[in-house]
Image (cartoon, rainbow, N blue to C red; front, side):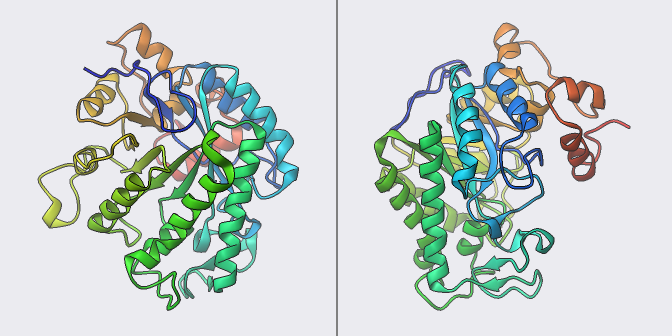
Length: 358
């Protein structure tokens, strides 16, 4: 039986010492120019010290126009390298595997932060304009530049954020992507941006950098059959180490009627994946939840909100398999002690009703 404290090897990069990964969590703690703050440094290093086998940064934007939220970590400039290098060194010293998530918000970028956002196609709902073909190619180049910065900083890997309706996901969406060039139309064309990113990052960063891809199987125009096809192509390519499926709830039944009868976790855990590893995220809370998804064939439990509540979740779980983590609402004083800044606490209060007490 696979347990949470079995090691996990990858095609590229170091092995995870356990199967528990900190999810990439929006926290609004970086400086306005995208440089690392002491608050974000403390938040992430506490989780690594607390025993997470893989510690993922929040989404780091690869272009200024791709900024998705205030206080977002940046990866679009060499000015970010000193802070990223400091962070990677501190994470790596704990024995965790360190990844930086690479992100472009596309039409979800607030106009107040970026001016006119960009998108695969003109989007009147958000005021975003379509990228030219040349600009799409620049997006690819800037993701690769960001991956090389992460590697130079010392991170073990990077993750391409292809979920949650951000730019890569927008290209995948048949609803939003109405392009008529070779980045629109068929699934092959709509997924071209993602696969160009995978190919270019692997080619330019070599085998020393691990590479993950985060996907959503539903919402934002995503269809399960299309996502399973993308999943299969990622596996077949042999260039990706981890596919990180953001499911919102690991026990959720698919919306699409033809896929009902199995949970979303089962849909993807049952697909062949060779040596590519599968992580899932979505309301994994108690140690029993972790074991249950491992028993379903998942390789990595991706922990979000419970990782906010307990910076040392892995250590507590290892010490006592009967341990039951706390649940929201959480007092602000407790959250401060768990490494959250006041700004992060207010973000959670505003966006996740009932998480913060009071």
